[in-house]
Image (cartoon, rainbow, N blue to C red; front, side, top):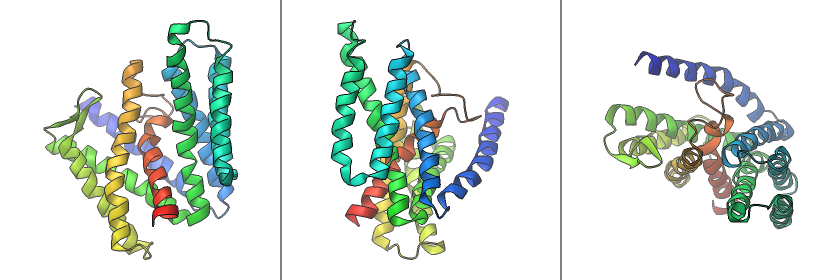
Length: 269
């Protein structure tokens, strides 16, 4: 119990230091600053991803996937109207990159699918946040981050106190159905609080259409990364953030929530 409490204090301390820094970039008027922060997150996350899914592969192959993911991120962020071009180019480049090392044919499909998924999983989904920032403003990015944090915190606290029924025991034994319900309630509360405090333009429909799907796609993003870690036999994606693990551990849910909020705000609203 003492170790668990100590770990919680480390997690809180890291968040207290990190959140204001992120806030500065989110509310920076020049969107290039936030784009640069997201690019750094993409770079570090892809390094962690290739470490999980491509262990033992040549460094050049892993570095190539990192560069391809960052390239897709930049292409979608800087020239989103050329989205299909970047997608086609990424698929072809990924295939070409892995051809020279395709000596073990039985594992080639696994390597190819793992590499390709990482490029789009990190480089593609993370591009949604700078796009949201550029098109809708910093408040929408802050909302996406806040609802993700609220859902995660609500699920954690509710799961610890009331959790009885496992949500996905084979992937993440700590997650419970009760925690998911608590996360939904907390996420909705955050969205309605944002409406009252700094986003009066949100309608009641907006609040529901953001809060409820975020409570579904956020945990799904968390479980996807948990699946990757469990397949790799790893507890965390990295050790960069004390008490939290790696960058990918912190943005796994945000990758999905940010993509959904961007889609909703720019296309569905």
